[in-house]
Image 1 (cartoon, rainbow, N blue to C red):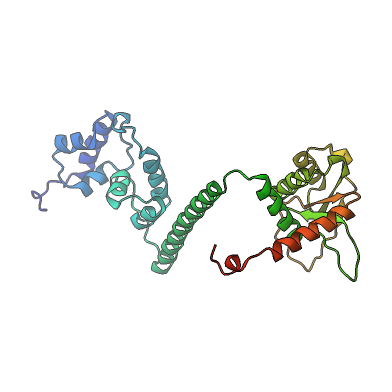
Image 2: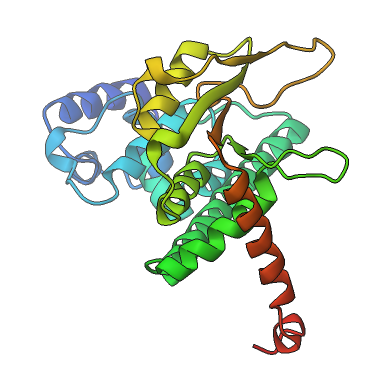
Length: 290
């Protein structure tokens, strides 16, 4: 677009007038019309650093996105990077940040790496949302467990996670160890279904020496509904400096050991139930033709 010769020659004087009008509460459009500035780049330069008046900031659903876009722009982000981060159109971003100074140009390689990283982070966020939707839908499919459902689940759970008798090591004990609170809850519900009295249960915590032992003891005691003083002596695992442990942090609470006293008869029944489940698999089920 061409302009009259010398139209913006007195730039500093024009800027003083533009700033005064801005501080008087005029919008960009009003300043443009008042000063006859029909070039957006020139108008941006005239108003650089001057915030818009409050009355022009109409509240809407995109206010948070607008503020975030401005923050990122001030950090030196490009339109492309902001678009990937926020999922907004470039036209909206341009409208929101046009009064801010342009960021310095980055090295093309560095800029490409940053853009690729942001795209990947955006993709990971989408995948996480998809995972969560799938999990929530699957949870709803389960519905309420019947007594039969719980019985079968408990037998399979014990045989997968509980201690088992061996021909070379006769130990008919009902001993269960796990670190998942959901698994512990299901196991206790199963024992209750079998009619195992709570006073036959003995609890013990197993945990690494570098963890919060007292916190873990309180956590497990509260989960199973007992006083922490009734826990048996905690088993402390010594740390091997050659091993890089990943089960660390505030969420790590070790494992809970649950033993049923005088459990030999119950163990034999559990083993029998398990073998009955295996032998009860029909040809149609094993072939997938349910």
